[in-house]
Amino acid sequence: MNQAYEVKLDKFEGPLDLLLHLINQYEIDIYDIPVAVITEQYMNYIHTMQRLELNVASEYLVMAATLVAIKSEMLLPKPDIVEDTEEYMEDPRTELMERLIEYRKYKEAAEKLREREEDLNQVHTRPPSSFEELLNEPPTLTRGNISVYDMLHALGKMMERKKWKEPLETRISKAEISIEKRMDEIFEQVSRAKEGLLFYELFSVPSNSAIVVTFMALLELMKDNKVYCNQEKHFEALYVYHMEE
Image 1 (cartoon, one colour):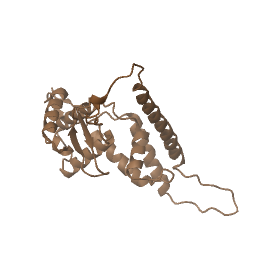
Image 2 (cartoon, helix red, strand yellow):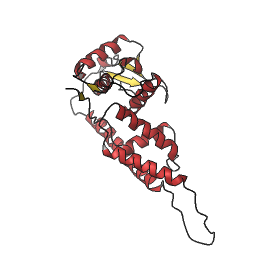
Image 3 (cartoon, one colour):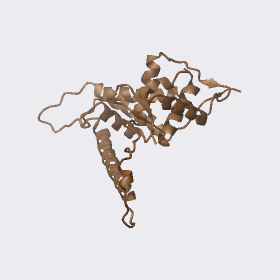
Image 4 (cartoon, rainbow, N blue to C red):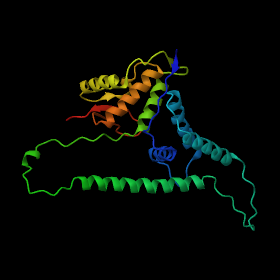
């Protein structure tokens, strides 16, 4: 019997994290958020996740409804306010702005604690040793500058560019390929591309199962530090590189 192909992702940190990502990406003033723009971009991410049948947490949908409500309220005509009254029309974005600012503070604090933890992990007490043999070793590569949201954005743009419109193949009789096998294939493909592989070249089959398995396999390879992704500037092409030993 055919069954829906559905997966759950634990890579997403929540709707505030996605909004903060969009604010940084579009260089938006957090104190003057253009709700129409941010709502459109936010919904693009949600629609991409839904098209891939990724399990979208309810908190993302609640935030989507909140953004639409704020957008609608801001489109309503403003009543005339008499100058000699103390009547004040509160900006409907205020609560969201305050939540984002508070979230950003905690996120920055968490990042500083993580960096401090990494620094402390490098501290060891031991007798003096010679490290001359290490001086000529190449520096260790990092995972790159790409977040899961950047990858999701690139995936959505690719589907739009390739005209993979609804309906994609959304029901399958069995899994065509396991994530583990797809990881091996991607790793081999990326390893052969010495100058990096364009992100969209990994997605050659326009079916939900193939797209989701490839996306999950790529995330797992990045998690295992076997590949990494880079993007020179926002909205430019995303490349996947082999992580050298």
